[in-house]
Length: 135
Image (cartoon, rainbow, N blue to C red; front, side, top):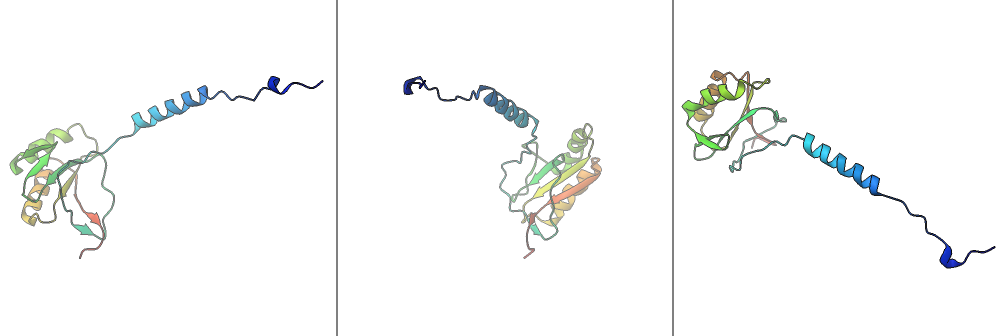
């Protein structure tokens, strides 16, 4: 016996469960990802051939071209760095600091900032550069 053409059913796949699983995975990965936030200070970082990846869990101090020092999106003076770093590293297990400096900042100021970070208790202090040539 032949079935009429109108009586044929097209196979259907229920994708409701698949959509639920995809959304749950999306939410999980979005919530478990830690985004590193850099300040919106425009800096031209110096380049170095030996540049590597910066630690994600480091306290970041920014020094711009106008010799302003920034920590936690707020400008601070160089003599305040030591106490602020000490406060932030008290709860941090890594005790790392990263100085992001403009390439036109004098080396005296860079050394002062690095020194204040070390006096504040940072076990490791790095200087952010861009990968590339040193020309």
